[in-house]
Length: 385
Image (tube, rainbow, N blue to C red; front, side, top):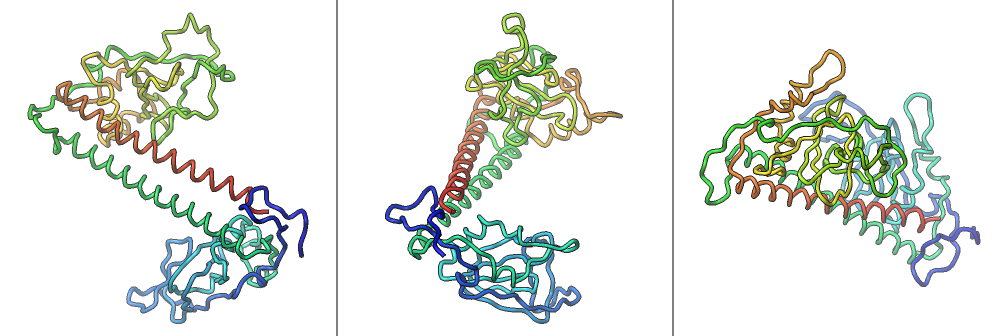
């Protein structure tokens, strides 16, 4: 039934008719449940089926083969309502419902937007009945061409997201490999043969100082306050969400402003060992009391030192050194005892710059990935009724 109120906020040019509400059974070409009989797990079993959304592999003496473009939705258990778009031939168990339609991409995104988990019920194992799916009412365009266009744009965005996720994982794997090879000295830049020297972190520093014991206040637009929770666990960058300023006299307490190349270490709690390096792009940053600042000597490359704090060697040091009877923690004297191998300054700079370059590529790819996800979220909210 057409409803003049069923009009999305964002549409493709040339489409203006209101959408209408239809039952899923009237949109789909076919809806059904797979059939199977559980048997004892046996690696030699001819037919094996991976339950959707689970790591379990279960053998079946009876199975349901389906081929083509279709949607699978988990019907029973914690993953009830989780949907997957599939192509090709799969074995479908009775824990799963399959749906086939002429505009399969469009229907997949409509169902994703609806959130099928709302249909599940039961105090024990959540369950979605096929009969309930058949009766489900969805808002759809009256023009099948609009359905097709919507399916294409969201499928394209998802393809781009998947490609960027793969690229991001490849870059992270590359960074991990390079860290292992470089800091073990298995890989060297051409022309460098001098052995690396083992030094303590304290020998590379002009000193360690503790941060501000001041409360946070609303961000004033200029003075940023860096606390443990503001350092991203994975990227070690300053999160730009929920910015605050320290409640201090900025002239009197300006010694707590980070300078280029300063490295900070978290000193207590579950995040002990997390590090951050200040770069000029971070603008004016004050560091908080549960952080320790290391001022790196002028004849040492701070980026090289920082990248060493991202190694497995440093993680092992933190794990051992932070053990306490109460909360984990490491003080400045203990951090100063961390040992690392270090080459001459010119090679330090080359190593630091190369690893920073990969970090920048990872950050740029993450930004692009987040933008694609935000674009998809916006369009999902505005291109469906």
